[in-house]
Image 1 (cartoon, rainbow, N blue to C red):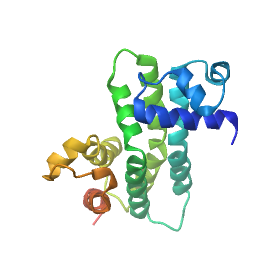
Image 2: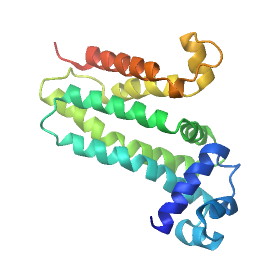
Image 3: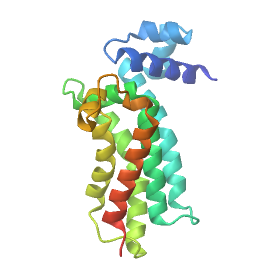
Image 4: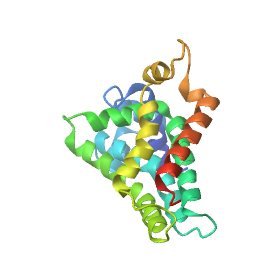
Length: 204
């Protein structure tokens, strides 16, 4: 693995456990086995390194969703099903970093970082918009508001998994219930969101 990738992976690990403010560049350098100057050379600042971590995390789904647009073996609704499963999987794969990410999006005192993060995440949505638009044009989907359909689909997932406490209380679970390791919840959320999108999108 290249030094730059090692730094990104090390930063992801530390940001996930200690948060943005709680992680120093010196700690990241020590974790990656490099000197601070190398981090400065590759990224310039901790904010830019955080952006690179977000880009690194988002790039997988961006590639997957882009390939999905041109996949002729799946119907539009099957593509939406796949997107839902991938989104839930990524949300659950590093829940701590997801919490930190959404915290940064809500803060006002680092506007440049917040804007950079939102731009990275929104780029992942472009292929999904195309899939929905193609579904409408082909007559498979209803004439829907594409942007608000996206917020409905993703908002259902994000809201429930924003906090383990909130999730537990919404679902009426007892203390000790861990949503991020619960396979039954993962299946339940997937099935519900797919049913919701099928009811909303499919032209019957």
